[in-house]
Length: 394
Ligand code: FEO
Image 1: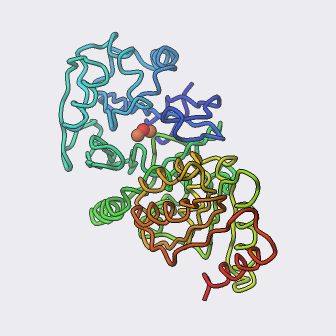
Image 2: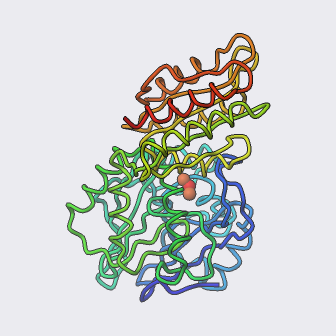
Image 3: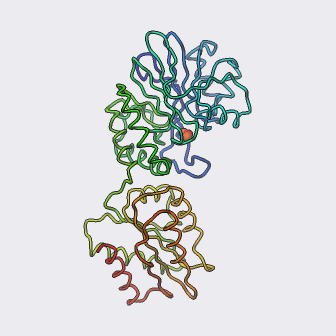
């Protein structure tokens, strides 16, 4: 199967409708994903990226129905992570001497994954590869977006930016192009992808986008390695990335909690009531951490100006669910967000202090000492939670 992208450029990847977890179990993919591989057939034939390992045989079989594999002049490995390089071992069995173009870090990574001494050609930003017919590929290193080896390449003449992971989304669709899919569904997956994968590298994202824009290359199409190809107003996703990369927040407060006997949930709901009484405009979202998808929660944290985290005290600490999301949040290195903690306890009550310390370590501005409640909240304790919520908006 192939889908024409433009002129002599075809998509030859794999749509993975089956996928529900990615990066092991670290990222939920409610809508599946795709591994986008592109075949350019100018005077030179070039394959850009492959697919995830489970689909390697199917990919190579499909590719060989499109082109005699021996006629592929160059393979481009924009990124060595397994979802894009996983079919290389199967492909290179057929064409072991074909050059693979990648960054120096790409060579290290590909050798580390596959222990093969393929015919690597290393490239850096500004290097070019002639395709014939007056067209070229120009390479742009994308270091730490999101791996050390990440790279993009730009095809002159057709004005296509093959951006690899950047501007992608985990979305399986039979319609390859951004103008053909449900826009709400598309942008939910875009922001989730940015929030969960690119947030730690936001300063680099902003810098790299400005670097690419300064080249003043006409970009008609952005063709990432997951999800849709941006052919309708591709600048729209670039503008989103610029907004998301600069300490993004909406007028939203997210309250996340874990609860054992409902006390911390009751606290959460009364804090929410207090916030709403004080500020009827703010978007308020509550999540039971242990029952919610962690990547969806991270996306809501990304959109928030303030985050409230609650846990009962258990064994002088916090619940494992709370610890899990805090570990995740710490890794995201969010900027310019405030936070506070809350929780019930039965005797010693360490959870609030522990959460506050963790939030502070994660880069949040912790606005107060939090609120804790001995036993299940009675009327007075619930009223104190309402007051606590209201105080956060003053
Ligand atoms: Fe889609 Fe970083 O791999």
